[in-house]
Length: 133
Image 1 (cartoon, rainbow, N blue to C red):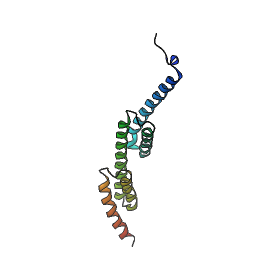
Image 2 (cartoon, rainbow, N blue to C red; image 1 turned 45 degrees about the vertical axis):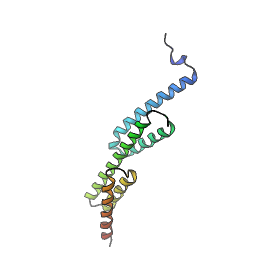
Image 3 (cartoon, rainbow, N blue to C red; image 1 turned 90 degrees about the vertical axis):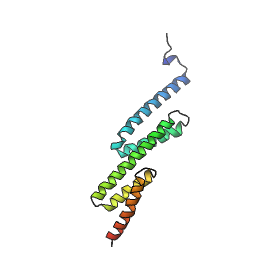
Image 4 (cartoon, rainbow, N blue to C red; image 1 turned 120 degrees about the vertical axis):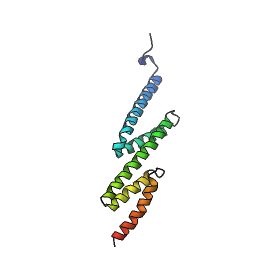
């Protein structure tokens, strides 16, 4: 007959419970990350939680996976902010567009959206400066 969880020493049970909880939390975060494309707040929460995971378990073999997910979530945030900025521009809401272009640059300066955002910020600054006179 195989031993059950109740047969294990308390320390081992606790470690097993912690590992099970950790696996479930990671699964939940991965699910959350998949929906982040539609919810920027969810993406931010997932980034924070994965960052906490990296800090709490620096030797865990899943660290590289967590880091890759963080990179993809930051890219998704940058894309979402870029699209929002474009929307504001299409509505001639220059200051709103500038805010979201700034978010692109501040959240992920290495994203492919950062360079075009910086260019648009410079152009919008000229436009906003001219329209306020």
